[in-house]
Structure formats: C-alpha cells, structure tokens
Length: 291
Image 1 (cartoon, rainbow, N blue to C red):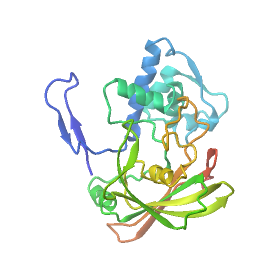
Image 2 (image 1 turned 60 degrees about the vertical axis):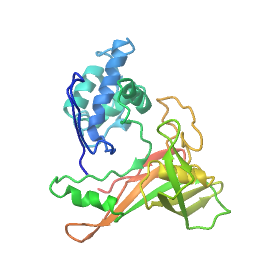
Image 3 (image 1 turned 180 degrees about the vertical axis):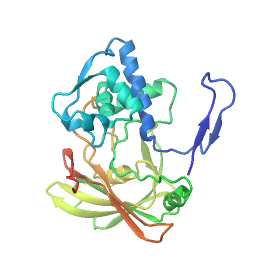
Image 4 (image 1 turned 135 degrees about the horizontal axis):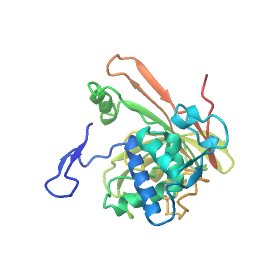
C-alpha cells in the first residue's frame, strides 16, 4: 500500500491525499520531529547548539558514522554536530542521543502534537521486527500478504500467570478507539480482532506467552492480554494509564515482535525472519548476532 500527502507549506490551498486515512511506518522521517523538539529546547534556553553531549559506546548503532569512525570510549559531540549527523547522514547513534536530550519519544510526540499534527507518533512501544520491501515494482505483492492474512506473525510477551485458562486459547472481540485517542477498548458487537495465545514458559507469577495475531488492529495484543486479566508487563496504557517520566526507559514494555514467516509471492519459497532481541522481564537485552 502506498500513501501520498501534498499541500502548500503556507497552509493555503487544497490538500491532496491518497490513502490518507492509513497509518504508515515513519522510518527515518521521524528524525525531523526529533530535530524540531531539540530546536524548541534551544529556543527555550534549555539546550545550546554548542553544548557537548556524551555519546556512550553502549548507545552505538553498528555500521553508522559515529560507530565506524569514533571507535574509542570517551566520545562527546555538540548538539549541532549530532543534528548534522542525524539529518544528513541518518546516523542512528546521533538520533538516539538527541532523542534522549529531547526528553524521550513521548516529548517528541508532544512536540508533534503541538504543531497541529495528530496522526503521527514517535513513542511506539513494541520492539522487534519491521519488514521493508526495497523494490517499488514488487512491493504491493508483499503488502498484500498482510491484507490477505497470508503472513504468520509471532510475538512474545511477559505477563501475569493465567492458571485458570486452558491453552492455547483464542481471544476474539470488537476493538474501537477509546480515551484518550491513542488507546483502544473492547466493546459489544461483532468481533473484528482475533489473537491466538499460547504459553511458552511458566515462571512463578510471570509467564512467557507466544501471541499470534490473526488480525492487525491497533494495540490488539495489549488489549486482549489485559482483558484476560494478564496485562503485559510494564504496559503504561492497559488496563489503565500509568504516568512515567518521558526519559524513563528502565521498564520497557515486555512485548517483542519475534518473527514473521510467509511464502514469497514472487518465488513461492517459504521465508522467515527473526528478531535478535530477547525479552528478559525488567529489561530488553540484545542477543548476540552471529559472526
């Protein structure tokens, strides 16, 4: 699926939208929003462009400008240099440092909202896989896999034990927008969402679940688990909102997009992709990549 939006920068004249009601991954375009929030902090006197920020090696992203060229500990770069690396080289290490300096993803999303943009978010919580198709000529063939439910998505989650339920179980319900606008809720009516839930491992009061979404509604897995009485560990939205500082990443949501598999629509070959991340209850650790 392709989306197009075009209008004059001065806000005058008509807008042209194609699939304007659909949501799409922002990819690296979110870095513009990070820069906007940084400049807001500069205008308020909370940051300076020549201010030096530490760039610890545990924030390095492999195969990026900073990680490739600054190979020794003790790196500090000015806000100005980090902005240039983020916007002109798409350096993800610089982006992570500036996102933290901006106040975290929630603060960047708040800045976007303040500009009158309501359809974009920078603070998605789920870790794991994002699947891209690089060839525009065949991209629609792969996008159809999701639309036609011909792709198997495998998530993992850590949540409270459900000893009174028989597994595997299937949760079907009708999901609609809730309050605030970014939350979803179950309501009466014909089901428009379905999740198959299995137990992978039992660990005292916390179990590790395998979740297979048959449909792809917003926050579907989180709402379904909360409705069963087992909200996913560290979920700030379900079953109730939890206030957390915008720069507090100490308790990440324990939901991981582990793998996707499908039959390649061009070759007919079965394909499977796996995330190298791993859930570990209170923290998210990166599994070592094969060399």
